[in-house]
Amino acid sequence: MTENRGPVVVRVNSECGHAGGTHTDYDEIDRKRWDTMTPAERVKECDQIAADLASQHFGYGWSIPDETDMKMTEENIDAAEQASHGAANE
Image 1 (spheres, rainbow, N blue to C red):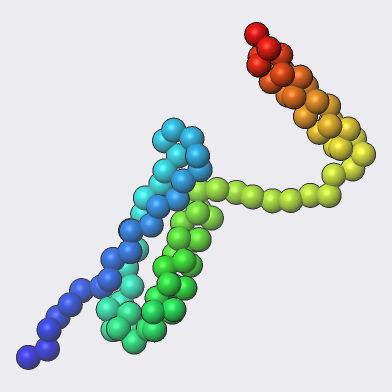
Image 2 (cartoon, rainbow, N blue to C red; image 1 turned 30 degrees about the vertical axis):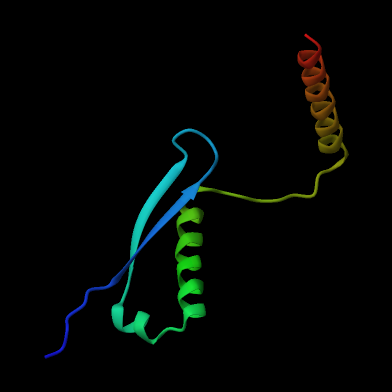
């Protein structure tokens, strides 16, 4: 008699660092497929499931800033540093 085992359940958490910013999801991997995977393949599969969850909740991007962007960034950094130094001296 063959044992009927269900799928492997993977719990995945993604966090963004603020209150309420943790998302938990559950995914399943077919048991026969799991049983044929090497430990490295299992880790890779679980990493992919986690990456898929994160991509559903968090966006990202990049750009090449122009001179105006750079100036605004430098001004914001300077203002933040001045504010933090002022708060430290109070």
